[in-house]
Amino acid sequence: MPRPTWTLTRDNLTQLMELIEPSKPHYGSRTPAGPYDLSVEIDGLTIWAHGDQPRTWARFGDTITHQPDGTWTVQHAVEETTR
Image (cartoon, rainbow, N blue to C red; front, top):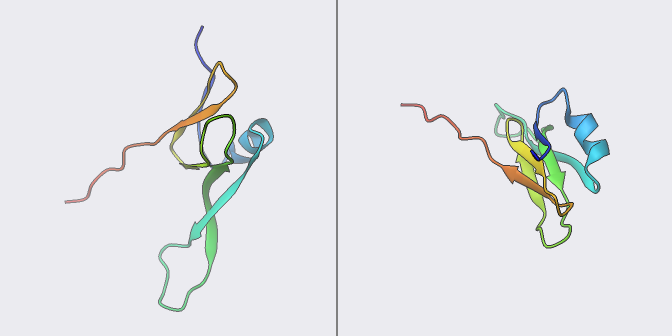
């Protein structure tokens, strides 16, 4: 049986926060940031430690999978390199 998976986006962040307990938004520095810019923005989802899993950060574009044992795992999206 296939495991439920989601690709984290800004559109489904709230839905996944409600589904994944415990979790919260992950905040990162706003880009582009100036030398005195202390602004932050939501850039993903923090899934708190649970079972034997450590606390995990899922960035937008990453795939979150609900495992049969009730834990959540994150497969990070591959970032494109600029040449």
